[in-house]
Length: 157
Image 1 (cartoon, rainbow, N blue to C red):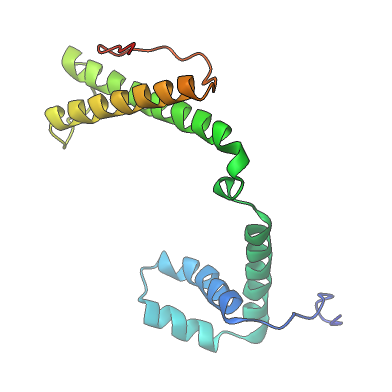
Image 2: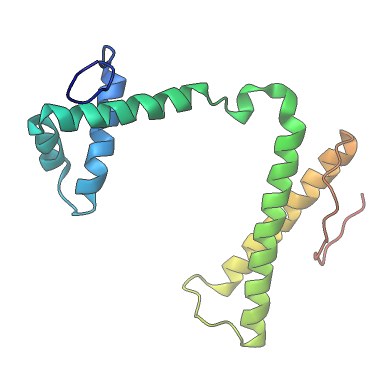
């Protein structure tokens, strides 16, 4: 341990760690809208204790990322991923449906940039996708939980 910082010495740094540290360092400079070349130059000329601090943060971030197992890596939990996907889809469709209804009622507090017809079509596709997920869940005996269905086209095939 260093007497000055009481920090353990840094392990050998690989290119991935160095790149993440520089990106973490660059976040504060990016807010000033500096070019990447300027950020890289600042990183190269930063004092050692500043660089070490960012390298330590990068090591922590990468260790956490390496330990986190993506949901897709565990194929056995596809049922839960399907439930989450369905909940997120129906929530988003509900918000879009509400916005379109407020637009139709004249109570929407902004003017959409996107044509209403396109937004309406997007909602139709989202509703159709939700229907496909419900059918698939039914076939695979997966409970998606109770969801209110606000669709004009309720298909029971």
